[in-house]
Image 1 (cartoon, rainbow, N blue to C red):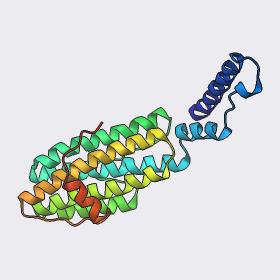
Image 2 (image 1 turned 180 degrees about the vertical axis):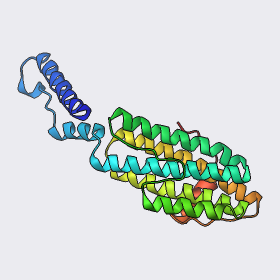
Image 3 (image 1 turned 90 degrees about the horizontal axis):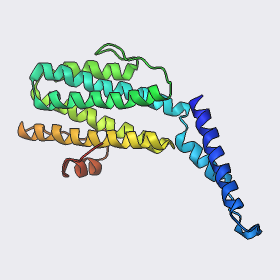
Image 4 (image 1 turned 90 degrees about the vertical axis):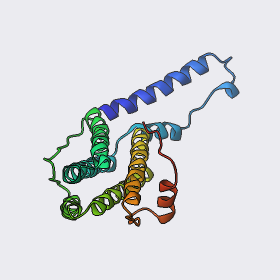
Length: 217
């Protein structure tokens, strides 16, 4: 219902603007401003949440939960500052996505910690939990893996949506994930560990880890 209201409101505003502009002219045809219907469609597309957008939001909510739950487990296991700090950021990422779901009256469920409706994410968590308990280096590699995956998925969703709000949110989450990746890589460097990107390209990975921390919204 909110999306319908948005569309009607946008169209109404454009019609009013057309009337005002035309009323201020001297009546000659060449002074009329004509609005392209494609412009109206573009505005609608930038504010409408489609089903594929909803699917993306629900998936990313669980993927951010995967990061939060994994980092909390690894923090309890190793007491590393990276996990202690970044698990809080992942909760903030979840909150940002939740806000969009609530504003658009989209139903969702957050399962208990360590439990996921997506089978692939559940398999990831089980593997991360088992492997991360083996060593500090393994734990830090898992952190890098999760951020690597997050960046890839978020960039994919940016390319697929036309919703300007979602693009902004996804880009901010990507910014956060780049910072997290840098943090995990510093931890690996300090422990003489290495990580090879599995999801983003090597060039993109190198560009991230060789640049400074960013200020993200």
